[in-house]
Image 1 (cartoon, rainbow, N blue to C red):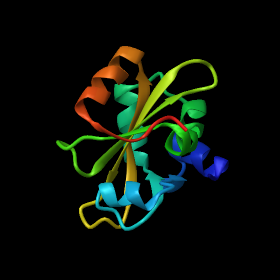
Image 2 (tube, helix red, strand yellow):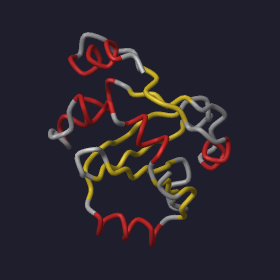
Image 3 (cartoon, rainbow, N blue to C red):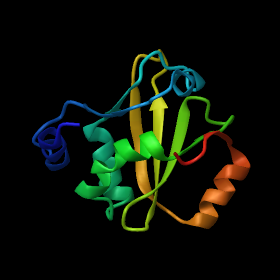
Length: 135
């Protein structure tokens, strides 16, 4: 991940999406109909995040690759192009990162990143299929 690109994307100095992480198994890509592993973060998502989750900042975005690599992975049948990653960060907070593949499967984008609670994770586990426990 290019930290300077992330800073510029967050500040609005850059508009083009950046690679922020990668799905590490082909099974995860296939589950959402993607033919790529790279996960992109767009300026559009950051703008949406600023409105819906203003508490998410630079350090949270820096943890997205770890959430994708080591977090619990869930897939819901009702959202076939989405994967959800639940990750306990180094400060004891639980984060949830959502990614979605494009219709043609050529790209995967982060769609949301926010804090969650343990009880919410239990509800997510009841709704979705676990593709990986916490690594």
